[in-house]
Amino acid sequence: MRFVDSHLHLDGPDATDTVAWAKSAGVAVFGCGTDERNSKSLLILAHGLDGTVFPFVGVHPSEAEKSEGLSWLPEAAKEAAGIGEIGLDPTYSPAGEGSPQMRAFRGQLEVAEKWGKPVQVHSRSAEAKCLEVLGQSRVKRVLMHRLESEEAVPKAMERGYFVSFGPALLYSRRVQRAAMKSLPELTLLETDSPVPYAPLGGAKGPALVPSVAFRLAELRGAPFGETLEGCSNNALRFLGGGKG
Ligand SMILES: [Zn+2]
Image (cartoon, rainbow, N blue to C red; front, side, top):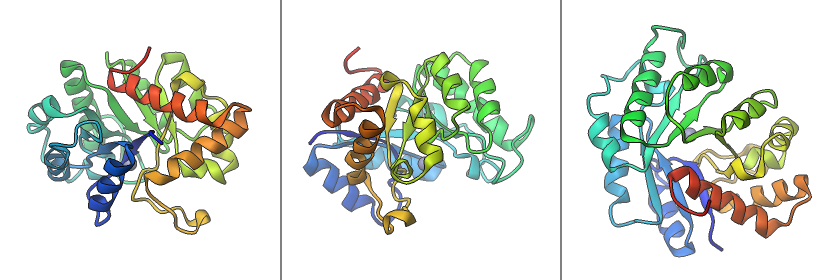
């Protein structure tokens, strides 16, 4: 079964197994960097894995204060599928105007704009601010990863941004309500691997994607196969290829 995990991380001890599994299963994974070091490692890992690993490079909001600037990013971005994981999250450090997080977010959007790359955005506790900053940039292909607020999802839809849902859709009413506000043509599936999901007995990894599609199909009253395939095609459109 071919499908796409549109947001995960490949810098942990599970990364080699995850990539080997994805390759043998014909699954495509969009790997996200969180700092300069692991973004560059991801580009190396992705060599020779065309069609399996699509590398996104960037500085995560949790790393913005530690980051030593973005001078490395334009070169890395040229080789990458896109820029990510970027955004704002005040639970890590201040994220207001002038903060290292805000500077990193705006700076990375500029690089994405310059190279015409899609971006993967982390917006926990800062959905409105992230949407505001994105609205000031000319980046067109945006994935709001784990956008789990039913108020924010319609705003992302109005802009034509993609949203992605993960295994929390299987048990969280909040995420289910948010997912019901998303348009089928702008919805992607992800696992944020290697994040484990305690309510699922600690399950993790891209093999969970079909379960997420199954729940989404059930919520929408849509066929499972069509839902999984539709979300995978959306992911390819987000990358700048695929159908439509
Ligand atoms: Zn992530």
